[in-house]
Amino acid sequence: MSKNIKGAIPKWRFPEFYSMNGWSEKRIGQLLRIGNGRDYKHLSKGNIPVYGSGGYMLTVNDYLHDGDSVCIGRKGTINNPFFIRGKFWAVDTLFYTYSYKDCIPSFIYNIFQKIDWLKYSEASGIPSLSKTTIEKINIFVPQQEEQQKIADCFSSIDDLISTEEKKLSLLNDYKKGWMQKLFPAEGKTVPEWRFPEFKDSGEWAQKKLDVIGKFIRGFSYSSQDTTDDKTKLLVIRSNNIIPMGKTDYINNLRYVNKKCSKEQNLIFGDITICMANGSSNLIGKSSFYDGGYAGDITVGAFCGIFRSPLPIVRYLFQTNQYNRELQRISQGGDGAIANLKEIDIKNIEFLLPALPEEQQKIAIFLSGIDDLISTQTDRIEALKQHKKALVQGLFPSIEEV
Image (cartoon, rainbow, N blue to C red; front, side, top):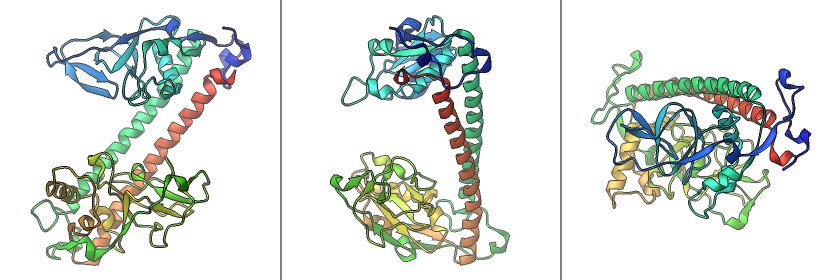
């Protein structure tokens, strides 16, 4: 298959490769072999990692492959390739790659990240791939020296992203630790730690959410009401609700041609709550709306809003007590929450400091940590966007030819 040589030259190239030939177009099957994962249940516990389409699963005492390998889901999660070094076992929902010819595994990993795997799915239900389909996909590859340079570049970026993600994880752990100290443990009426000026302020008082704020139902609309017009009403859905974090109004957006009531329009400090979802473990998850969206914004009918003038309410929904309350509600029925009702939210009880000043102090302290988490999250997102731009610039695409 011949292509115009200019089509096989990326937009950006390291200077030492400017005068070299363009990249060659080859089928993936010409560059490597694809292995099938296998059942591991006959194996004993050991120190060899087992991977499925979703990533690491457990450890066993034998390995299926030893060496660098790019893995891609055969069934289920097919759009999340990952790179493995050393000995490992792959289950039957995962393909692994080996016997590389004229290419470097870490370079192929970056190529695999660029491919839209869902486009090649062979099933209408659960996404699925076949070896034959993967082997027939055409990609561009340069000489191995240039492959290595590109692979090293992306490896450095991935290492930096990984380092920043570890920092974010530590910040989240730091916040969780303080949450446990600043709010009473189960069976207690005062927290483990209090600000010095409130040490002698007595026990916290039990209050229902119904008396400290207001529940507002989500906005109903039909599929005919949806639009691509970004000036219209933005509707927050359950996948925009980020537990322990801010309501996401940037990704996976839906706009509608209808208007919500004034009360349903989100304002700063609102708690957005998932009230119904296909997965029971998502029911009750909540996030904080920071007021940053410029237009009209509300939540969909499967969600709800809790609005209160008390800043500490934001953190009540992040406590262990809230999770225990959700568990209690589920145990009151058939053992799994199909959906939350308005009365369920209103009747949830929390312990609160009697003094507004102590409530305010706790909210200010935790919001300071949230600001650090937000800054770190933005830093990681900026690095990922930088990497995405490099992928577009450093790799030619079949579609560009």
